[in-house]
Image 1 (cartoon, one colour):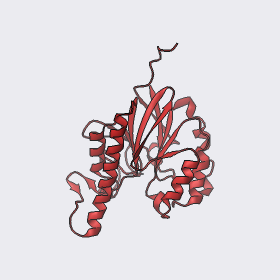
Image 2 (cartoon, rainbow, N blue to C red):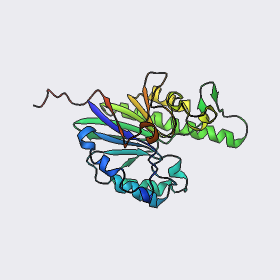
Image 3 (cartoon, rainbow, N blue to C red):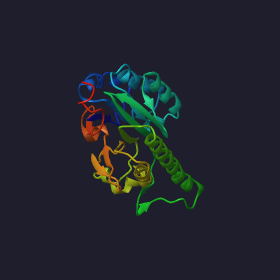
Length: 248
């Protein structure tokens, strides 16, 4: 059994230093990997990123992250990414990584993603250049996620996980105002997950949403925004990993 800890929308700033570290230090007892689903900072400043870095530096489990919209607010996402990587995190944007933990090979494909809405009520590449670019940005994110998942398919992983900030399905947005659904996610991400292949999809962003959802292709989706899960992280169990009967 592979144990995946995940949380998003921790929105850290200097005054919140140290609030998550005690819980994160317990991860080896209950999880094989920690996924961070974006909005790790409040305003995307390097100072805030350094707070997150101190929370995760030296953890005894691998850490894989994507950025969120808050992490882009100060328009220095490259600096935020570099600080988190220096602390040992794998920060993904249209990329994939395979981490080994407990003898299992855990593949994670990640992107921030973007909005646009869901089937029947979504934006299209039509009209003003700004509207077309809005949708194309999401499509590029989804295409990169699809490519990263397909890459993992050829890398002998025990499980494949899609990690995004924006939501791939409307199920996990239940509780949010319908009017803002187009700004919370896109069906293009779900299409990428279904066609690329994944065992689990994890996202954040929807603070007033719902934890459980599923793509039309049957992939489990979990909204791990901290206001939704109400704790430092939640652990999900996936079948896989080495046979415990072997090597004894």
